[in-house]
Amino acid sequence: MSSNVEHIPCPTCNWTPDQQRRCSYKSNINLFYGAGDRGAWSLGSKFILKDRGSIPPIYESINIKFVKDNTTIPTPAVAMEWSENDRNIMIVGRVPGKTLVWRVIAANKEEVWPSMTQVQKEELAKRTVEHLSQLRQLHGPKMQTVHGEPLQRGGLFAENSTTLPGCISSEDELFDAISRNFKDTPDEVVALVKRRMPSPFPWTFTHGDLTVCNIMVDPETCELTGIIDWEVSGYYPVWWDYVGQIGLSTDDAEWKKLLRKNMQDFSGALEWYRDVYACRDQMGLREERWEKMVVDAGLSIEPPN
Image (cartoon, rainbow, N blue to C red; front, side):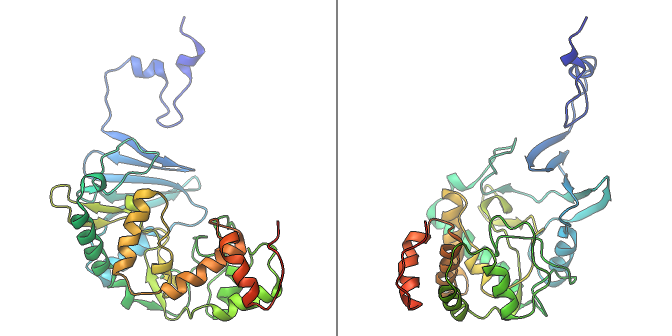
């Protein structure tokens, strides 16, 4: 008699060990990435299926079409998309090449970055920004998606944002959204940070997630073959493409430093956003920047515990 474990289905493929053992089938459909409630499957060598929760809404296919219609940036081709059982399912063509660095939770660890020379890395960053410069010409009436919906990304507002603001049209609305997660910040310091906020205009179409795992390259030539994962793209403050290049790992930090080196310079906005982090007590910047901010605001107090 087989054990009960033999009849417990796999949560991913829904087959039990007993069923697997009773046939010689070997699938060409494989789960290669998972995080949270989302997964990505390889459908043979030509397509990828993305299976995600439908909340927050997923606008990646709309963004990809917009980019294809307005630029020459290499992006995935959307073959099919539908929703069922509160899930969003999208099938896209596989972009040729390999990713710079794979995510931690991934079955396929093929990556190019570790084998690239410094010259190749710098050239790739330069070429990538040249492609992205086409997006800098695409402006919207508000901070929103390309089809007028609120953006579904909390990175600009706070790492732990769960309820994001609606479409934003003014500097006051933007600052109110950014500052709502400030922690124990005196009114005088809040006013100082607001006065120093750089103008967000024009609202500029931005990829929003240029991590090393979203850059595809030819492993032989190290040339860019595609930019993937456009799900959080939309119209952001003109400086967010530069300011939002926050390194998530050693390799990612190196890559984003090279990207920023080739982008339009918004170093003043980056310094301002470090003050925002300090007010949120994030990124270890509270102690580093707090004293000067307090003095600049005309106060003489110690940072809160």
